[in-house]
Length: 142
Image 1 (cartoon, rainbow, N blue to C red):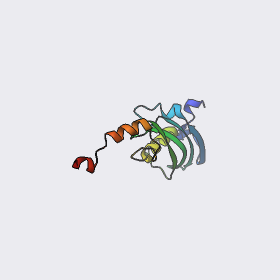
Image 2 (cartoon, rainbow, N blue to C red):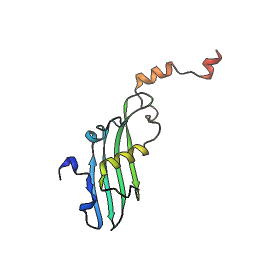
Image 3 (cartoon, rainbow, N blue to C red):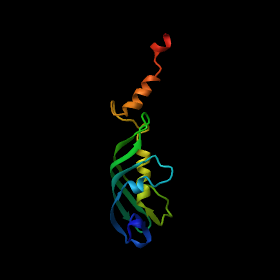
Image 4 (spheres, rainbow, N blue to C red):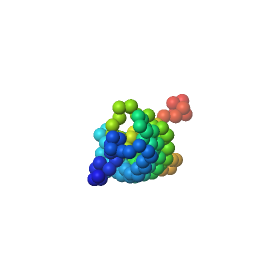
């Protein structure tokens, strides 16, 4: 199995029982997805697949850090990722699993809605610009 397909699992080639998979997603994968909000990062993915005669169950543990754009200053920022998802539901007719893609989707849906640096972490130039254009109740009264 080469590195490009190491995260693809062919269910029909596995024996019934428990199968463990460890993969790492790095910036080259995370930023290569079209129209992604991820700029990069590194996450470790541990997947546990239990294959039964007629179905399977899948658990994933995803830990690491991804890079996104700060909504406030537009600079890159890091977001810690720590996701444990049990009994991931997939179509009954699934014949292959792309563990990297499943992990990517779990990361995206678990990101905070607003990406912003903690207080004082934004780009100082952009922060000053924002402060210059900030509307306040006091300014409105004058």
